[in-house]
Image 1 (cartoon, rainbow, N blue to C red):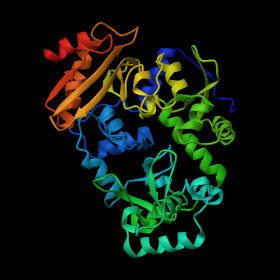
Image 2: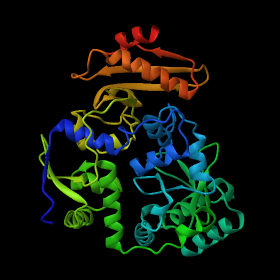
Image 3: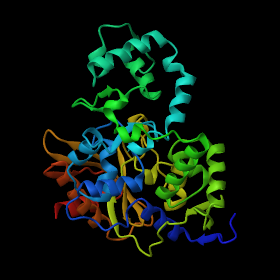
Image 4: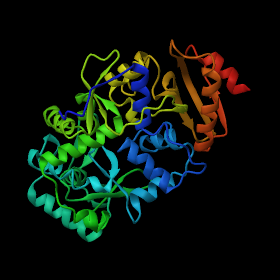
Length: 402
């Protein structure tokens, strides 16, 4: 450790504010979000996780809304699908949208996935991969459906029918031989050659060494987290713990990370040297189940005292809070959670349940009603209906009626 770097001590409230500021919740909002706003926001989050569930709004749109407020989703479409392309999809944190400059950093991950040839790709021969790649070269951008000419299908344990073309394209994508050019109206992935998707300047960048790539991912994770344990930093870009720990030690030695002790945390933590330490966070917004603030559930409990689990795959009768439950961020605390559904056919935002946390302030129902109205407007819904489930539902329904 450099002699000039001294460990810092943070209270739990200070750690929360550092984490939220790193994620962009201390940024001054723009009256009308622009491409510049979007780029600033993605610089904070680092990545936007992609998920197909559309009961409210698809996952990658919601973190931008939570930080920017109502915005035109075409901003994201332009950034990820039009020239000059600023964002691209890859396995950055699960399936995720990331800045294009991370493509060279991910080359080692691509090489590992090519070499591992996991269970999903074991039947993908080199000859078949080459044939599909040739089709992409001739016809791209294409979906798996475009290339599916009745190839043999297999029925997996979930009951999904995947074509052989889809399997091969997934392998080529993971190995970096094709890239995602965008998604169509049915949310199907459109594949094309990397040189027709990514800027030439990005493809011309040298591939960093494995150690340099690990340091860069941990560096970015530390900027996005503000304060974190080694486990948090490894999880952000789904790295191995050993590689992350080594990178953390090197970044501490370089003075980019500062060791920290956090009130109530039983593990060593690290603060990015440039992390802001605001005295106040004035947030009021709903967070996606796939928002980086709540990705790592143990971290969420340490920072916010908020026990959170996604119950999408839990049988309905066994769910505690609901199907698609969003935490409500007020100030620097998670004070409530709501199970939401957008009924687009009738233009209604349905609150299936609403629950308050034990530390929720008196104004929670009023503030949440205002936030629901803002979200409904962004989604193009004209009404809000609060169903009578959860201890916050009666007060919330009354505020919504006002």
